[in-house]
Amino acid sequence: MKREVIIACDFPSKTELYDFLKPFEKESLKPFLKIGMELFYREGPSIVSELKSKGAKIFLDLKLHDIPNTVGNAMKNIGRLGVEITNLHAAGGIDMMKAARKGLDEGAAAVKVKSPILLAITQLTSIDDEALKKELLINVALKDTVIHYAKNAKTAGCDGVVCSALEVSEMNKLGLIGLTPGIRLEGDNTNDQKRLATPVFAKQAGSTYIVVGRSITHAKNTVEAYKKCVKDFE
Ligand code: C5P
View 1 (cartoon, helix red, strand yellow):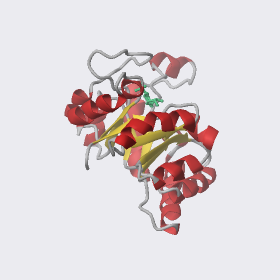
View 2 (cartoon, helix red, strand yellow; view 1 turned 90 degrees about the vertical axis):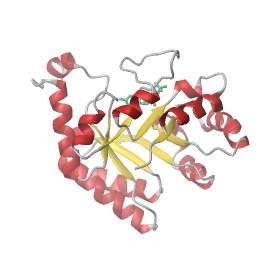
View 3 (cartoon, helix red, strand yellow; view 1 turned 180 degrees about the vertical axis):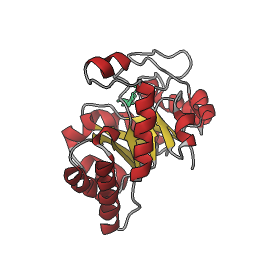
View 4 (cartoon, rainbow, N blue to C red; view 1 turned 120 degrees about the horizontal axis):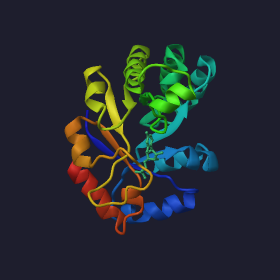
């Protein structure tokens, strides 16, 4: 599968998003975009249709987690949007992930588009071993839950997982692709991220996709920062 850089469009509304995209359009660049909850809950599904009509590839990062029937029906609607990638929480269980896969496939088939790549979140990076034990009463190592949830995701028909560059080779061994956030170009501000990787490291580790937010969106020259990520990773 082709390696691709995805820009995390963490903007409050489409005004800021379109301002950000202007210099890319000037250079006829069509970057792969991640639309998350912040923008989606403000603008609704029309933001996805608008970007798709301009030829953008979309990773719709909504991290679904509910009973199988609800997630299946929600994924049917996501499948109809024609996005390239979407995701859910593996913590919802195998039946929920199976319903999601089925819903996506049915929704995409209804409008004759390709069914999206489905990725599972194993454990959020905000959860550590202490929170797992004290808050969630799960008495096994975090790393073991990550592997176990990834196996469940594979069983349910997911294509891959969202994971750090440090975990991706283990995921590849399970037959899953890895999408890796927490990417910084050499010398950039680390902000609130703790376990960071450069595009070069993620490539060597075996990531198929990297998600880059502030290293591009907060750069002095956003297009150059994007091109550097592409050069290093793709
Ligand atoms: O600005 P930055 O590159 O840190 O943004 C990373 C993006 O990836 C954000 O949209 C964030 O929500 C997302 N993400 C992450 N870590 C995860 C999962 C998603 O940073 N484990």
